[in-house]
Image (cartoon, rainbow, N blue to C red):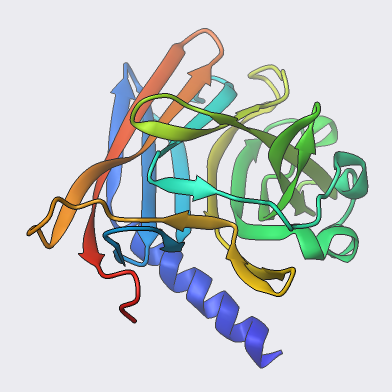
Amino acid sequence: MLRRLIFASALLALALAAFAQAEIKQQGDLRVTFRGELTPHALPRSGTAPVKVAVGAKIATTNGSNPPQLRKITIAINRNGRFDPAGLPRCSLRDIQPSTTEDALRSCRSSLVGEGSFSARVLLPQQAPFPSAGKVFAFNGTFDGKPAILAHVYGTSPIPTSYTIPFQISQGRGTFGTVLSASLPQVTSEWGYVTGLQIVLGRTFNFHGQRRSYLSAGCPAPPGFPGASFAFAKASFAFAGRGTITSVLNRSCGARALREP
């Protein structure tokens, strides 16, 4: 129990640090706030070390009207950050959808790679495809035959509802080496709209007697420089009838020797 409390406190501290800085993009009255962070800040100059990645978004309008429906989210991570699920058990969509949080963890706890939160405004409670608010548990898995992060959400308001957002993982090009993409259900604006999603990803585990990390990264600062600035993440949000809003987060890292504590 104490270990879980310590882990939850660490996640909360990471989330608070991650969302202290934000990139705000606006298209007409539609506003998207994109936040994210990579921890720890000090990383190997050569090679990689275990890290956690926090990303999140808030969606609103400047005039208080209902925003358009969010249709797709794409998040690309800098190529110096690496996803390596080899050795982790895989969870399938049928294992956790539909299910409560407790049932999802009972089925796929060994695949857990992150936690977060989800929020929406529900206008037609009896037709809600996902809850108005809920805890997100992210599991290592597959979707349509491709590697994926299965983001399971469960909430009891306005009615008990579970929904799983599959983020398919693919290889990017250039600055961004890993791309996470997810489509949301096709619902009308009369039903309601998504207002926020945030997830902290990262986990270490043992495989074949070796300590491994689901996420790792380095800080490739030039020789003689104590650190580097880099494009950490790029996010695109596609809305029904309003096109796509794209945002890029720039961050910095401190370089250290690989064996340095």
